[in-house]
Length: 372
Length: 190
Image (tube, rainbow over all chains, first blue to last red; front, side, top):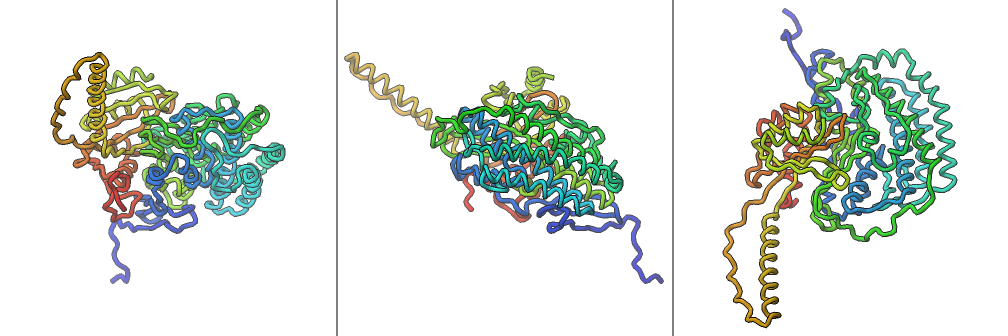
């Protein structure tokens, strides 16, 4: 008689990934049903840091909600600032001076680069390579210093105001930004030599975690996830806002749909963001950074308003319903990673566990933005 | 694909009201009102046209009917006053005040489910809304058409208690697993 229990043909077991796990970058739990090393079913469990930002929006004035926007996507906080101020400006009919729009774009593109750099370091860390993280943080530190000098904070920015920005940049910032652009351009070949062309990375990412264009559509995936699947969709081009129409930049698109494609999209986007910052610095007009006639108490006319912006992770949309009072009647925050993560269950079915972790890293998750 | 063609196709499936909104002012192109029964047909039209789902959410219109009645009453009163003033100014006897019409019970307030769709290639944001009574908030699920709606509907159920009939797994997503409250309802008290 055998000392072991006789196993049935299709025996599976449940594996909890998280909520405290280094690969989930925050408190995300994935309930995996495993058949040996293979995933049968993956169910992400959300809500561990749910703070109900939407209800908070209904309890305070339009301006008082501003700091909340920087606390959802802490890696690209300025884009979330931008989405919210834009929708309120649209609703209340506030004009923004041109210089302020330039400053918004310069700072949010720098912020996008810092977000991609952090993703790059953390993603390679997930795959078991430690040192690229240190290089990426070294570069990111320069951006944080630059942004700190103008916004006053290093991570949870609240720099944009209705009708402009709260602080003007000085010559030190311009010189620092130009020096940084040159520095990062010199460093990018090193990143590619060190990481992109590394055979281990290629083996871990190529043809791993394929996501089809149709799957992106059915789940509403945006940002680098859909651009890695051959869909040329970027809100900055598709639905131009701010001064993006005047900027000359490309939208990197890769057809393969695997984790490598998403990796390449983000690496190429860093260069495109640098191009935008460079052009904006060249064209930066003189003038005020704040509109003159912004009412102290904002009361947008009754109705529904929507505005979307492109964050580092995809399309962030804000729908506000105003009843004409000084607080929002309803504030809906459509966050990109929520939709991007929703396809995870289907995408990693039948996959090996380490590959599923590579796929998760390539989605670039920011949990506070999913849970809101 | 253009917005006008979508508008025609949506009205063919029996949407109650479709309005083209001013995009620059509002941020979306088509505002479509459908009855809950027509929802699945309307969403299928968008699916066939290649739209992707942006979000599903709700709006609680508690107190809307009372506000509408108050507005209507104020309007009637203002008209009567204007008539009386005009008569006095003309040196006539003001007409006797009309008796206030007895009003029945207020109609029930509504919960609204709002679906946002967008297209990868052309710029045409479509918003579909459907209203249901607050006491029986039920609307068919669209998760069989768009699997991505699964989470959005669970979230909307968390926040508003809207029941998506036919949803495969309508358990709390963001709220605790035993949550029996709906925080975005206007009469929610923690």
